[in-house]
Length: 229
Image 1: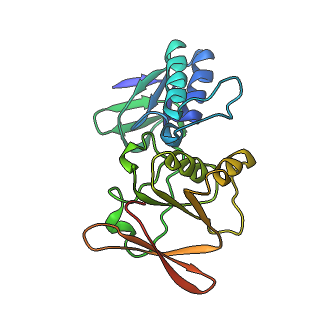
Image 2: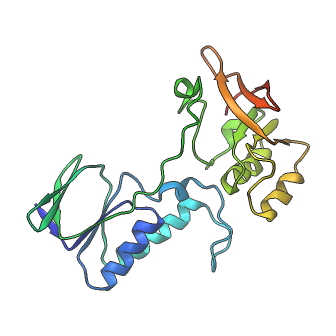
Image 3: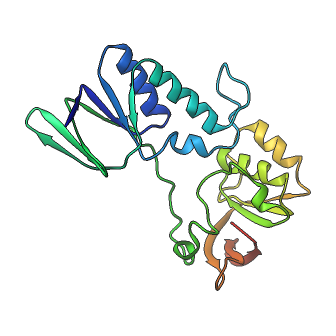
């Protein structure tokens, strides 16, 4: 069984940064994660990271990974199944092996929140997605709905506006919460992107495929037809 001074669960920005600092302090450090980058890796464009120009989120996470490996961090892409205490050590069990360590850092990030409305579970993964897009070509000439009002939703809408026929941005609040620079870009694409404020998603509708989203606006239900959401 491998033994390390420190095991970090998660290879997103936080986990990789922790690994870099730990290894530079001389700790034998192992990062275990299902994948690289976490939610940042699914962001199509990152342009507010100081010192770097516009780049894809996955490319930025690869730079984190490369820097971590350069200072001696071990990285294994496995799913952690269990963490238990064994005397003065922790035993971390993955889908493949067991590892021992004197300390564990949990840096597995956030899981996108479900809306918990009818139809969501049925269409999740095929027509309902929980990440910004790395490639928008599959949405070419389609009618798409995006749910959200912060930077990720705004960036996804901007990306899709370049290929989709119509983008409806469903915002729960009275205003968008994204950065002003993103909102300005959205408003400049008003011929493609329509922002609906003060709406709550009630259901995802369709038989074999998703064909509409029902939202409540001012106490009344309204349906928006979509090809994908």
